[in-house]
Image (cartoon, rainbow, N blue to C red):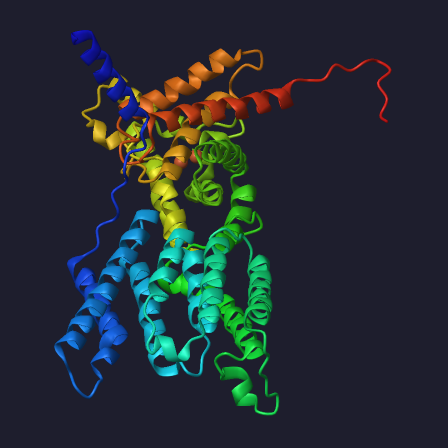
Length: 490
Ligand SMILES: [Fe+2]
Ligand SMILES: [Fe+2]
């Protein structure tokens, strides 16, 4: 019996170790919470007040109003919950965007419901949310926004509502995945076209009066005007997405890809002024991308973050070994470990300044301090101890914070393994390479650097494997192909 309990406990222990830890969402201030709550109350009132506008106010009417009020309020709460679950780093500004879009939509429904098609009301905000906050949040938003309609039975065609729901879901799912503005433009043409065809099939009779321009554009239920208006609003939305990105700090896939362009001035500067750091950056991109793909993380985010992680070295490239080209090491010249440690820390501080100057989004800026975490600058600490200086260990540690996401943690591990893998003998076995990788990762783990990263033990295992795969590729490239005397080019 005791053996069985021990085995069971062991099983539970190992099962727990393989589970992904739950990432706690970022805390929101009390004032922001209050403001968001008040907005939710306003949305609930706007969505339900029409129930009270009857000549004889009876108890049953009041009860149905109370039910409707709380239905919308709970839906808002559910929406915020889903958005925080999907994006643990979501801030109050972004939650305000989601809630404000809901408020605008509920307001438009009350005022323009007889003139505007539900397609034009629901689909464009779903596109903004899916691009900025992901597909699941957008789907939750669509379900809440589709819940309450004033004068539901009299004014809205149920087929049109069904088409709206399907189009919104398609936009929500695809919007979270599309990686370029061109694809978004295609979506803004194809979805209205799909809506048009669906309406022709489901509603059949085409009522269209080309003579009255105003009616052509805003009459609800007119098949061509519905789809045309949807296409126009979606195109305008796409034009305004960069504005939403900068106001609400959204990070869309298209923005990430734009930032990852190696012709960006800051990256060009890095390649010219600090070529060694640029090479190191490209290798890290390869390692980090492979590991992120393996654990199902955000590849575009880590690729862009890796590109900018060491831009701070631009402030003094020659102080970093990869840019020294065999020349004299300035650290040896000053022979002051404490000063050297300050210079190393400066690559993080200066990197943050470069990020601010170049208006890099917060998720990308986070890679700059978090890739170093609170790691020890072992070499200079050792030197200081040798000199018997009166020092504290914390003077030889980066200021942090430690990685707060899986992506920044992977970058830290890739950063640690890159130099060791590059320096490795090409004749080294896979086992030796894996051992080196495991040692470096384990040292970060026991130092507590991965504590806030949300990486599970299983994921760390996959990261090790993927680093090994990248090393095998590097080794394969470095192996010289045998050449003969009569070697000719063909
Ligand atoms: Fe660094
Ligand atoms: Fe680095």
